[in-house]
Length: 345
Image 1 (tube, rainbow, N blue to C red):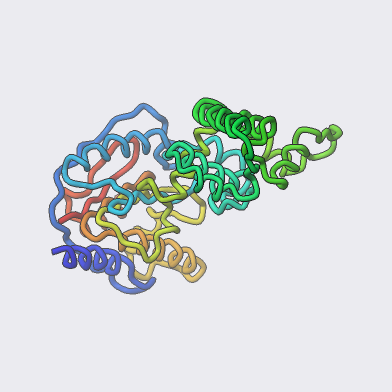
Image 2: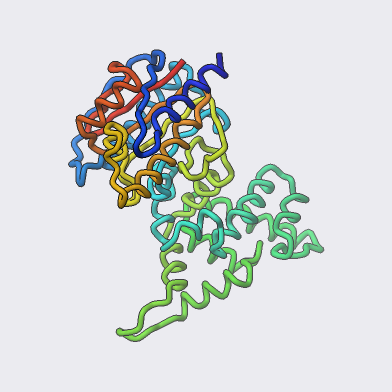
């Protein structure tokens, strides 16, 4: 049964994704219990559902889907979002994401602060809380001082207890200042230099602030709880991810959020192209293939259950095509300009 449904969802993706001038074949999926619509008062701009409305729908429907059998463990269910900004808003590190000019700095941990927090400090604090002191010092490596007396061990323990509290209630700046003051554990040299530069740099009115200085100053104001949320996501402890990070992976349940996150993607336009074979002009072929390929990756990730949540306004042509693929009762108006298309066992 599992392999049959997996093949069915792959078939939905494959048949829904023809070459630019070929015929679209529809697939009729099996039933899913009706999901009611929600209301919200946000204004819809540029044909897109507001982020607050998306988060509201996800929260309410996640509870419903749990009741009808969805297991939201990270290895069972994935919620696929298009952009890291949407992911950050949902996962609780939106202010942290805004501190950077490029999401790679914090997603790939190339930023010195984020790399230290994610790879050393947070795992070390977790080991400390679990009383695994040997592993804590192993994780910190050269950033951990050598303790040779009971007094030094007591000082270390007090500093770590204070750090644990600051992580929960303070900002990134509070945590960094604590590390600079007590040196338990030590801030890495590169991060220390960035802090020094951010603190001391004073430019003229016409001089542009260096990007590294701006990032550190922005980051210091971020609640450290957002760093914890980011690390939790990066370590795979949540069901959320971006569409681009799931190629080749499969999960029991998949909920895909499709909207106008970037100018590079327009899924309403994609559906209109699919509904009218031969309508893709040569100058739009690359855009068609880019949208089609990402749509295929999303639809083919599920083994059993698939939900597509469109957060942009869909044309009558697009809705008609979705109805032909999923069945009329499976395409649901969820309010605020969005639609959900449902496929399940």
